[in-house]
Amino acid sequence: MSPPRTLVSRRTALRTVIAGAVGVGPLGCTSSSSSEVSAARLRLAAETSSAGGCPLHRGGERFDQPHSKRDGREFPKAPVKESVEVAIIGGGPSGLCALHALQGRDAVLLEKEAHLGGNCTSDSWEGVKFSTGAAFFTAGDTALVELMSSIGAPALPIAGGDVLVVGGEPFHDFMGDGARRLPFEPSVREAFRQSAASASKLRRAVPESELDAQSFADFLRPYPAELRQFWDRFGASNWGAGAEHTSARLGLSAYGWLRGDEEGRLSYPGGLGAAATALGAHLSVALPGRVRTSTFTHELELEANGRSVLIHTLSHGEPHTIRARRVIVAVPKFFAERLLPQVGADQRAAMRELRYTPYPVFNVCLNDVGPELAYDSWFLDAPFCDVIPADWVLYAGRGPRPRKTVLTVYHPLPEGQRAHLLDDERLVAMADDVVLYLERHFPGLRSKVAETRVYRRGHALPIPAPGQLARAALASRPFGPIAFAHSDSRGDVSAFAGAQRAAEQAVAALD
Ligand SMILES: Cc1cc2nc3c(=O)[nH]c(=O)nc-3n(C[C@H](O)[C@H](O)[C@H](O)COP(=O)(O)OP(=O)(O)OC[C@H]3O[C@@H](n4cnc5c(N)ncnc54)[C@H](O)[C@@H]3O)c2cc1C
Image (cartoon, rainbow, N blue to C red):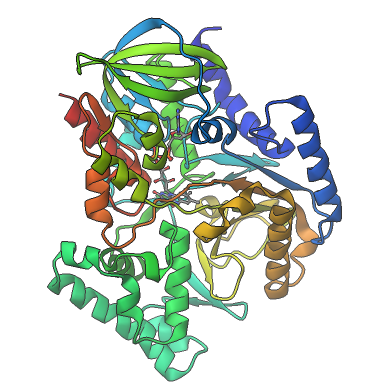
């Protein structure tokens, strides 16, 4: 079967694959015996789940090949059988945007997973599409808005703002006038409003590079615990870190997101996974044979002439080597560093210093309508950060009743808990905690739960710690004919639009 037909047929199969992989669980297990062990553990875990015995589905990235590389495995190399002008490594938004920008040139995109989209992925349950990663972008990201419209996949507006949920009650405009209604001490209510004004003053007064070197926690220190708690959660969900590990540059700018300084938010049923899927499908049809999934790159070898690169891959398990005159590396730097044995020590150190958050996303599938307080509801005392009703973009909480719905629960973990993602029983327990918390605040919800799906990522969002701008710039410095895309190249909050801008910079660096 030719690659484009495979991909076109995979557009439907993609959801099935993702859903199938999510459903049976043992992604990353290559032998049938380990699959059986995992499946058995999953069944056991589901049977013993305390949240009403709801089956737990889980899935996520393939861990086996990257982990083997990390552990020093030598992968087989094949003689060069193919030459291209440009090879793009990684089929997340930045890789896809790079390929889109390179239409008309001799370019290929190599993605290790069977599906495209990186951290922008979707799944569906009983016809309800939901996000397993990225949620929305803003109308202010005009280049992205235009790109999606140009491929016939315009995004839908998201109605309304976020709410802060305290004791089961939603509070709107909680950083503005709505703060007056928060069920806190007057001094705490005032801090929510007043800190927003100070943040915007400081942003105008202090140069960006100075703010980037400082911690957001220093700004928040004089304020009450409730405000710091909120930002720890908002930051963890949006950029993978609480205030202590966030630069003041980013934290202060995020006040603007909540006050609605940004232009309207946009999304799709299924979140930004739908955008990545549409872009991937468009490119697969427009550029037959150029988009290659299940192709793991394990080494980039700069040739002695310094002008071309050998890309050593395992494509569908078989060694395949491509010679390229230019390469765009659109994978996260913690892994890019392992692909490039020849990169200089300072750049390697900068790549290693970038930090990433482990991030499971839980999707709670409900046989009926659940709480639909706002597009994004934030919680101060939950085991997770926030919840998005998956079909909000269609119904804004006013859809037909009864109907099946899904709640997407964002549950980032501290970096020290990365190994929890490989622990089935722990994931089951976390899913239980999610449902039980929701039941406490929204009585009756537990009886509606059909299943919970978990999508786990070991290194999801690059953490914008103080000093991130300089670190990201050094880590992303072009290396001979190799340019770097990926959203972690910009030292910014990791976002689809950031991935697109990183791709544009990498494409520009090629010529
Ligand atoms: C839970 C969550 C919520 C988010 N919410 C939002 C949001 O609301 N709005 C927003 O704009 N952004 C959001 N983001 C961020 C957004 O998903 C990312 O910024 C975006 O996916 C980055 O795209 P990328 O292409 O730079 O990288 P990635 O998405 O990381 O893609 C990298 C790709 O490279 C592939 N790859 C890695 N190693 C190899 C290899 N050796 N060989 C071949 N392929 C390889 C990976 O499989 C992957 O497909 C969220 C992210 C997460 C995790």
